[in-house]
Image (cartoon, rainbow, N blue to C red):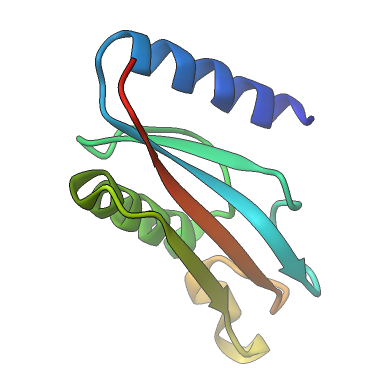
Length: 109
């Protein structure tokens, strides 16, 4: 596991121990050039606080938004982000790559 993944899991454990409702977002696939490799994780709480990284730019903001919704509904989500090279900088996929991110709400401890 990467250091960022280890950190996200440690934070997830701490936050659930504090009684926070959280979701864990994990990069499950990448195609082409992507900012973060598969296995990268982001932990998000119901207030939108987050630690870790799954991408950057607008993609990470979109993942946080979807994670808060997943916490509220209790339903996991598979998110896919990709963009043509000419618009890639605007959403944080600067090299035109694609990523798939799984967002899983986590039960409180």
